[in-house]
Length: 511
Ligand code: HEM
Image (cartoon, rainbow, N blue to C red):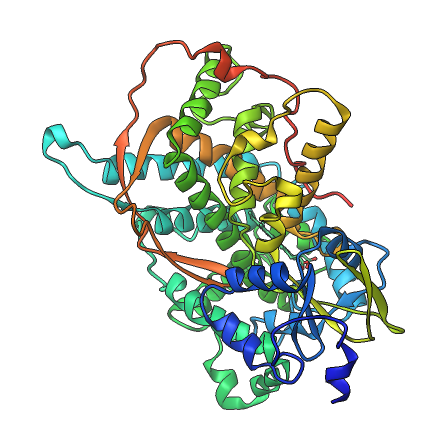
């Protein structure tokens, strides 16, 4: 009764003041993003979703909670992100001091400033992906070759190989084998729902101390799944220690230089892989999906790219990150892809500090007591028509281009840009891999579309989806054909605005 009354000012489903079952059912439904968005639309920008638990789609509250000097802390929800049986990792530390310390030591490695091979490593993996698509998946009907490609798998293989290459200097080999030899993706799809249950019933984390449960968790000696990937990462870590230690200039080297121990590294590398691959893969596949199913958008993007190639502004065979950031329409497409399908849908719940706090819900101040957790509704935030316009449900990159130079218009685009940046979190919890992710998207979106035409096999059901913090996409079958390189010049009206920084999302998070 006390818990119920503590949050009585906040509206929500009738049961959520008393029980966590509604939250568990919603999170397990496979479409929690949609239900959460309905809740925030119906009950206010911050609504109640469980005893002691709120949900917000309000960008201002989200920024206030994550800001560098905010007194909000991570809520118990974060403990569910502990993937290793014994050790925490950067995403799971609830203790602010420990999180701050490890973050400070890991940020330089993630930023790429100490990793001189990073861009070349991304290029190499992209070229491998392009060659694979060309040799194995391009349909050539005139030669009687009909085949399809599962974009969900290939995009995951690409981001997994990129992250392993830039992190440890060696790829997992997903693209080489064009397969998931470890059963990693299947195992991840099984683990994510468990993380959701632990996020709701955090006390269940104690089960991990039971030897039988502990034995079932992924470990580096496993032959398959997440454990096999952990094993691969552990081997790479081991190579850097001892008498004949391997010396390389990459993320791992940067972490070691900042004093991370072998044990810390083994736990962090698994997080690096899961945080760094799935999010970017889903952004890439969904952006490709939306562009290739919107012919006017595709035409305009290709026109911009071809004009830039003709003007010598794009390196071949792979565009450089800095060049991509100067293409306004490419940037608009990438931001629109992140917005329409924000890659992280987990609650990332922050905790109200001692003394409680006032939360403004659509103009009305409401009191949230100490310890209340406030979860994030990323989908609702990115589909907010107040910020993104009345057509927020539609993929329309044009919304990111300035209609005129008035202050009002600049303010509109600046507000959207700031809000879409929240896809990566904010402030002291913001994504450390944002620069890497943007580099992958800048290159892969353009180079894939310059070479290939993608046509979904089924327009009625282009893919299967399960939303469990990340997205598990399967059966995303496309017919891929070679794009004819015609030399016709692109119409000028499609390519205006080249040059400058194109309002790109910043290269790296720099607080
Ligand atoms: C489009 C791709 C990506 C998106 C949308 C994304 C989004 C996020 C979000 C929402 C958070 C948590 C924010 C919070 O707790 O409030 C996060 C944290 C993090 N991400 Fe990403 N991420 C992406 C790609 C990557 C990549 C490629 C890497 C690694 C190279 C990475 C590494 C991390 C790390 C290490 C953290 C934890 C930061 C901390 O706890 O201090 N992410 N990301």
